[in-house]
Every structure is written in C-alpha cells, then in structure tokens.
Amino acid sequence: MGRKTKAEAAETRERILEAAERIFFENGVMRTTLEQIAKEAGVTRGAIYWHFSNKLELFQELHERVRLPQEEMFQRAIADRHPDPLQLMEETVYSCLDLLSKDEQRQRIYTILTCRCEYVGEMLYALERQRDVDEELLTDVKQAFHLAQEQGMLSPAWTPETASRVFVSFMSGLFSDWLRYGMNFEIVQTGRACLADLFRSFRRAPEAGDSSQSPVRD
Amino acid sequence: MGRKTKAEAAETRERILEAAERIFFENGVMRTTLEQIAKEAGVTRGAIYWHFSNKLELFQELHERVRLPQEEMFQRAIADRHPDPLQLMEETVYSCLDLLSKDEQRQRIYTILTCRCEYVGEMLYALERQRDVDEELLTDVKQAFHLAQEQGMLSPAWTPETASRVFVSFMSGLFSDWLRYGMNFEIVQTGRACLADLFRSFRRAPEAGDSSQSPVRD
DNA sequence: ATACTGACATTCATGCATGTATGTATGCGG
DNA sequence: CCGCATACATACATGCATGAATGTCAGTAT
Image (tube, rainbow over all chains, first blue to last red; front, top):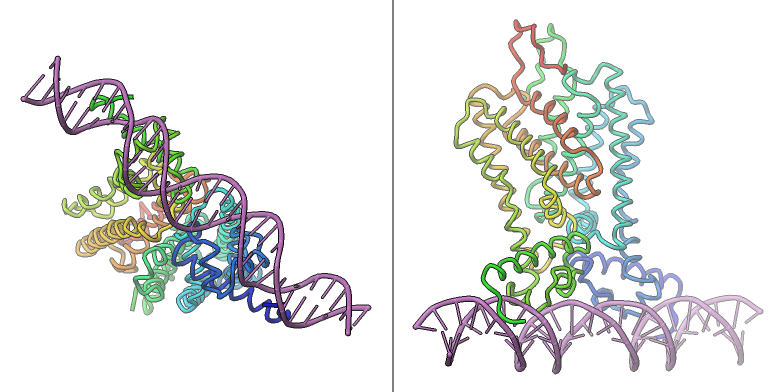
C-alpha cells in the first residue's frame, strides 16, 4: 500500500479512534492491545503508531472528544445572571440527561472513563483533568446557588454549599450507577422525577397565603 | 523450605492478601503481576498459586472481606419496623460515614473496586455481585421510605421512589468522588452537613402552629 | 519526470506474565 | 519413626505485547 491523500489519512485516524472506543469499551483500556484496535480499524499497528505515539495518547485523544457541553452550559448559567438560577440549572441538567441518554458514543466513552479503566501510572493524568472539570463544575453550581440565595429563592433549609454538593454528587452517582451496571434503568425518567423533587425542595416554599398551588406533586 | 504449620500457612495466606491489597491499590488490578504480590508478601509465586487458583480468585477473596455492615444495618432498619425510619436511616448512614473515614483498609479496597479495576471479562462477575448488593440496598431503603410514608413522616414533596433514589445515588456519588480523587475533602463533615439538610427535606414539615422550633438550620 | 516524503505494512528482538510441572523439606497421623 | 501430604520454591514452556527498524508504494512539490 502506498501513500494516501490527506483526507484519506484523516479518515484512517478517525477509524482508529472509533475502533479504540469500541475495543476499550469491550475489553477495558489495559487489556486492549494495539493489535486488536488495528484489526478492528482495518489497519495494522504501524498505522496506529504513525498517528499516535502510544496507547495513552490514543486514550487522551478519545477523552478530549467528549468534554461535556455541561461545562459551558453551567458556566453560562452563572455568567448570564439569570433571574432564576435554580430554574436554569434544572433545565440544564435535564438537557444533560437527554443528551447522555441518546448519544451512544458518549455513553461508551463515559463508561470507559468510569469503569473500564484503571487510574494508575500514566492514567493518573486523565484523572487529574477529570477532577479539575468536576471541581470547576462544583464551583459554578455553588455560585449559582449563592445567587439564588441572594435573590431569596433558595429554601432556608439549605445552604449553597450543601445544596450544590447534594446536587452534583447525586448526578455523579446516578450517572455512574447507570453506566456501571450496563444502563439497566431508564435514566431520563428516573432522573427527571428525582431532580424535580430535589429542586422543589431547593426552592423557597411559596407564601403562606398562596394555597391554590401547593408545591407537592401533581 | 519445608512444610509449615497450619497457623503459619494461614498467616502466609493473610500476608498475601494484604500484599495484594496494597499492590492492587497502587498499580491497579490488571497491571499487577503475581510476582509483585509475591515479592511484597515475601514469598514466591508458588505460594500464591498454592493458596489461590489465580489473580481473579485473589481479587474475589479480597472483595469478600469488606461486605459493608451497611448491608445488615439497613436491613435491620427495615426489619425492626422502627417508629422513625428516617431517623434510623440518618443515623445509620452517619455510622457508615464514620466507619469508612476511619478504616484505611476499607478505603483502599473500595478505591480498588471504584477506580483501580477494569470491569471486563472475568471481572464482570465482581460487578454483578456489586450490583446485587446495590439493588438490595436500594430496595431496603425504598421500603424504609414507604414505611415512613405510611406513618405520615415523609414530606408530600417526595415519593419513596424519588427519595430513596436521591439518597442512595447521592451517597454513591459522594463516596466515589471522594475515593476517586484521593480522598481530598473531609467526607464526614461534608457528608453530615448534606445529609442533615437532605433528611430535613425528607421529613414532613412540622405543624403550622408549632413556631418555636422551625426546621431551618441553627 | 524525478526526487522526496508521507502513510502506512511487515518483520524482528526483547521482555514479561502466566500456568504448570517438578523439586524438596518438613509437620503430622498412624 | 515412617510415610505421606502439605506448603511452599524453582524451573520451564508458551504466548503475547511492545517498540523500533525497515520496507514499500503512491502523492506531491519542483
């Protein structure tokens, strides 16, 4: 085989990444051999070594491709100084739910990150980045709850700290439980029901005189 | 070296398990070689193969040794038909927090289970058991919330389903976040604060006439 | 048209890791 | 006190997986 055109080479690279995604998902990162990836992609190991220096770089590149829109979504939620931050966050997290539930590639990659990869040695770099993302998210959410508090919309039963931590950790737990056990429940339905009740609890109860619309479920 | 006494053999087995725990924690399960474990335990691979058929069985045995008291704790919480299931669950989960925060062996083993192990191939058996445990826990907790509801102690803002799922997933997320990033925050303090607010939200608000003790924070 | 280089394929040397087979010394039951 | 089973250590065969070195042919610039 001779030289390919640039477009074809890019396509090869893409096929390698997609193959890696599938094989990592099925076999785990550590026990996946470059030979397997090559076979799945219809190339040889030589091609992989041409496009990537080794397996770690391949993994990193895969990781790069799924930065959750969540990051910017929640950041925008703060930056906008939306009049109702709680409402905005609730809607935002619903979008995240829908997105994850429909995007199979995202599911596979997050599954790899969650429970198909041992975070030791070089892989610790990946963990560090995930931690940064998580901490940034927590900070943003916390700020949103602070905003809600300033606007008198946060129930006095919560602090911005506890509310944000409960919210973020709940979502984290829900996602990882779902991915870990092979997506064995309806995450959108379950998630929405839980989040609706949780956010209702976050909001300050309506004034005493307002008896027509109670905050309980319909 | 010749034959050892039974007690010495048991001690050797124990040393192998402890060594495996440390090495798995540091290097991950997949990339840990039996040679490393043997060296750490001060024996040869022959000894390991004598006591365990292979690495998987070693891992399983390690897993067996940390069945959370949580399992029976929450089961008791239901079986007892405690007058205040919410109170009991809250106290129970505080105990779990304290336990995990103090027991370093438990921390290491749960860290291995959470992010030092690729769940593929034979390791899927381990996952199945974890799922069984988790589902059983969710069922128990759900029942407790049903009990609380029947006794009129659950806030109408929650259903037993949403409350139990939020509770369980929050704890799951909190634990895994903590373990994943190297236990970089005070889990007891954070956890207690969050759980206090969460359980306050779970409880039915006191009667309107009772204005002396409001449910807001102190 | 030619030289050069990009995009791979192929081959090879090396190093582990595993599992098993075998050696061996010793505690223990009869 | 004798023989066997126990509790290991040692040695070996096998099979990958890696990384690098080399081969090859077709685009591409001049």
